[in-house]
Image (cartoon, rainbow, N blue to C red; front, side, top):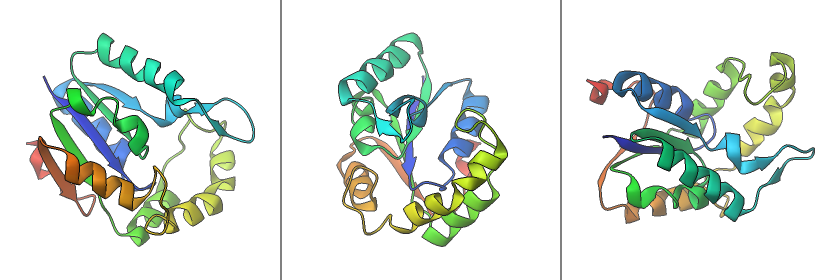
Length: 165
């Protein structure tokens, strides 16, 4: 059974690719955005132990899955049980374009207007990907990819899904 981890910058197409893989292979989908944050304003991360419990529960309840996100710390939790890793390493300009063109994410925002109100902050966040040194950074993602011992691939655009066949 497939157990796939997808990661990359915000706007790189992680959720879109995850949905395609889940449909093709009948896998469960976990978007780490759905469990990484407390439901408060301003946003604040849950503790690593809280998120870990939710990730382990998801893995226990699903034989095959795709777990996706930009959180290299959270991705360490399922990495030993995964059998494939996909790093969406798109140019920053492409991630920004994707973010501008993304449909309303109802699981994250109350409305399309609320999502669009957050767009400039998101663009700024995406633009800092290569400069940051946190769990969301390109450096952290490169290390995750480099250290992985199983089947892995880097995609540099959103058009390379011929491996879905």
